[in-house]
Amino acid sequence: MKKFTLAALLCASFLAFGAAAFADQPALPTVQQPVLLTPFGQSQDANAVKLMTKKYQVDYEMAVFAKDVDWTKYKTLFVVLGGSGKGLGAAGLDIPSELARCTELIAEAKKNNAYVVALHIGGPDRRGPNSAPFLTFAGDANFMIVREDGNADGYFTNLSTEKNVPMYTIQKTGDLRKIMPEMLK
Image (cartoon, rainbow, N blue to C red; front, top):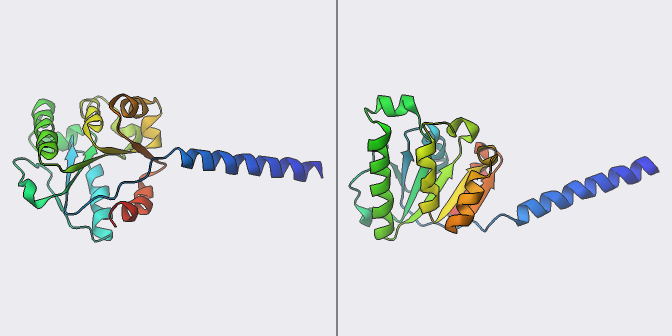
């Protein structure tokens, strides 16, 4: 009987903890389409988001080098954060020129009332020196989605609090399958 009681208490504790963790999540925004999708830092993580947008038949365009955008065509900007030396090199870019593109794109999106969603879905692999300069753009977004293991040091939690940007945490990149349909109704 004692084993059963202990097991029941442990299960109840896990359920309560899980519910509390879920309750701390902000409500997902409902974003308007069409969506412009672009990587900030040229990592391949944007391709995972592209696959989700395709799967859920989102009206989107992926522009790896988005610049001088006609904002009358888009309501939402998805920026996928994470630097890749290989991606930057293949694109013929360096970090300063990519940062300039990203800064300009965010400013223009905001000026044109586009809703900006920053996604950091690469986990710890996208927290290295090539990624660091691009992570700050999450603080310029209207909403951020962050993979939990990419926030192990609390960087995004602190940025979210400091910049008053709601942050939704996912456990794994595949969790986008659950939240994309909610956001893009």
